[in-house]
Length: 283
Image (cartoon, rainbow, N blue to C red; front, top):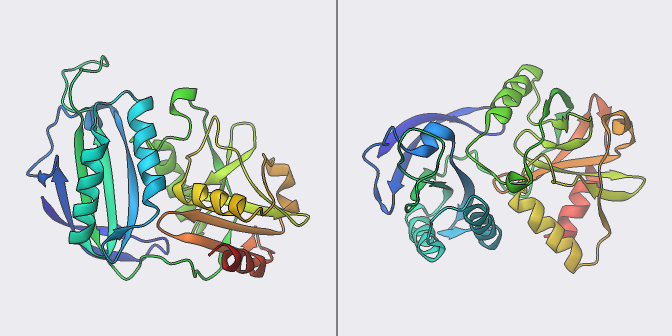
């Protein structure tokens, strides 16, 4: 299936793209209305930045896919998925490759059928709005909406149930920020609307734990791994919204945007040069 769709980048500039969708390796001619991804959000996904036919951060994406299949008890052959991703990335060359793993077609009701999963791959060609590690600093703040807690089996997974992010994204648009911090119900900062976050307090870099809320981002995993390799001090620690004023430097990150420094948080100037220095050290 090839569609022309309007999409928005992190700067909210709409561009028209041609999106090609494959289902189980073949061109997708339509979505079955009894696909459990459509009925119940029964599945998960990952979005991969492709450069010169190579899926970037692939090891982390593969880990996400493997974890999702295992924890949701889906029936998907990961070796086949990896082969498909590599083949489709060579077709795409540059852009975004999205993998959606659905439990598949099922009858009405929550009880999951014991059958092979349905694998969707979408190709979004390069639009000129995609990302690099060199990002201009953005203004940000803290949203009023918050994330709820999830059950341990789903913690950190990028499931197809994204209604929290849909609601938060609308609030973000109304605030006029590119990205913003989001707390859980207890007021602990968790992440951004579509990114993870790292911040510096009293010279110490920190990132919130992803335990009962939030998504285990692949760029977050890559940055933590690089810091560990270089023995760079990082604390995985919670921060309450009442301590927002303590943040000296802040950046958001995901697999598509890389590291995005924040220049102002709630109109307070931050040390965004510290983010650039950290990026140069790690990359």
